[in-house]
Structures are given as structure tokens and as C-alpha cells.
Amino acid sequence: MKLIPFVKQHILGYVALILCLSLLAGCSFSGSTKDSSAGGPVDGKGKLRVIFIDVGQGASQLIITPSGKTMLIDAGNNDKEQVMLDALKKYGVARLDIVIGTHPDADHIGGLDKVIDKLSVGKIYMPKVSSNTKTFESVLRSIQRKGLKVSSAKAGLTLNLDSGVQVSMIAPLTNYEDTNNMSAVVKVSYGKHSFLLTGDAEADSEKDMLASGADLRSDVLLVGHHGSKSSTSVAFLKKVNPQYAVIQSGKGNKYGHPTQTIIKRLQKQGVKVYRNDTQGTVEFLTDGQHFQIRAER
Ligand SMILES: [Zn+2]
Image (tube, rainbow, N blue to C red):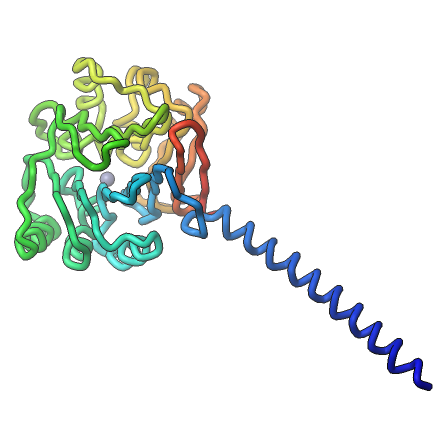
């Protein structure tokens, strides 16, 4: 009779152990799942992070340098203000050392007003082109309220973000009638690796970038104008010669972005394509030697 409770205790202990083990396995499984999603726990120490934030049909890239300096290029459309603020919070960003509004279109600068209102901002760059939209005026008002001055975004600038990271502006090289072509194009390099972030620059600007002799070679290309066929000309793509490309566009958008022409062009060149519309936010981490790529889904 005395044995029964003893055995019982043992069996109970055994069951508890098995339960614990399976729980632990469950934990580590959910942990590793989380780890592969952008924004989950990540060891960004000594790494450059370039995050292509999913803002639906629009664009936004957040750059966090190894020493924790931050740069935001574009902030999605007006209805993505909260998405932007949430994303910045998620990545622990309370201050933006550099903000770039690539060009005045709403799908790029729409969310900038609220971002500037809520965060501390160092320097802001925008191309010398104005717009009479409410969106543009609202961004200018936010800039004014913060007592900031807009520096003019143009080719040839070197941006002082972090001593270990090179940031240079490749375009616009001249004045264009089309605001897309006025897009600030930024190259970010760290160690062996570089990113070319092209805004909505189209074939005209691409042609001028090629003619300028700038070093366009980059490992990661933000595909111009959301994958529209007016950008990513064959000559430009060949010169950049990326290993990876990211397309920032929204699911079922009315523009038909990205176009099959550009998807096929990228495939033909052997470029691995990541997309916000199918994969959510996409993040690249590099120590200057290797890449770690994480997609939200
Ligand atoms: Zn756009």
C-alpha cells in the first residue's frame, strides 16, 4: 500500500518532465519562428540593418548603423502614419539622425509629417521640387514646427551618418519635369556590401546616373518606382548588378505594380527578389561580410 503513492509520485514526476520538455520544445520552436520574422529579437550588434518597411503601396526604408545611428528614407502614404510610428517603436528608434523625403509624392512623404512631429530629427533632405498638395504642405509645416531646415537632396552629396558607413547621394543629377525623376537616390555601403535605394527614379534619371560615372554596383537594389516598367532599365540593372532586389508595393494596387516585365527582367539577371506585398517587412542585416535576410512572412 505504501508503494502506490511512491509509484504514483514517480509517474506524476515523469509526466511533468515530459510536459516540461514538450513545452520547452514548443517554446524554442515559437522562438525560432519569431526570430525569422523581421522585427523579432535580433543581434544587430556590429551590423548594418536596412529595413524595407511594409507600408502597402508606398515606400519606406529604415537604416540603423552598427553604432545605432538612424536614417529614414520616406514614410509611406498618409494612412500609414501609425504603421510608421509603430515600426519605428518596434525597432527602438526614438531619434532619426537623417530623414530623406525622396520626392513629394504622397506614397513616399505622406507619413513624414507625423514621424517628424513625434521623433527627434537631426537633418532632413528633400529634392528641390515643390508641390501644392496638402500632404507636401503638412510635411513642410512639421519641419517648420521643429525648427529644422531642409537641405537640398542632389547627386554628389556625402551624408555624415556613421564613420563606418558610407552614405552618398547619386541622384538627382539635374532638374526634371517629372517629380519621380527628381527622386533622391542613395547608396549605403558597409564593408563589402552596399544598397542602392532609388525612390521612384525612372529611366531618364537612370540614364543620367549611368552617364555620371558614379559607382552604381550594389548588392541590394530597391527596385525603382515599385516595379513599374518605367524604371529598372536593362542597362541600369546590368550596371548595378545586384544579388538581391526588394520591391515595395501594396497587394492588389491599382497601378499593377510590380509589372511582369520587371519581375522577368530581374529573374533573367538571376536576382533574388523580395516583396513587401507578399512577404511583409523585409530586413537585411550585414556585418560587412555576410548577409542575413529576414522576411515577416
Ligand atoms: Zn512611389
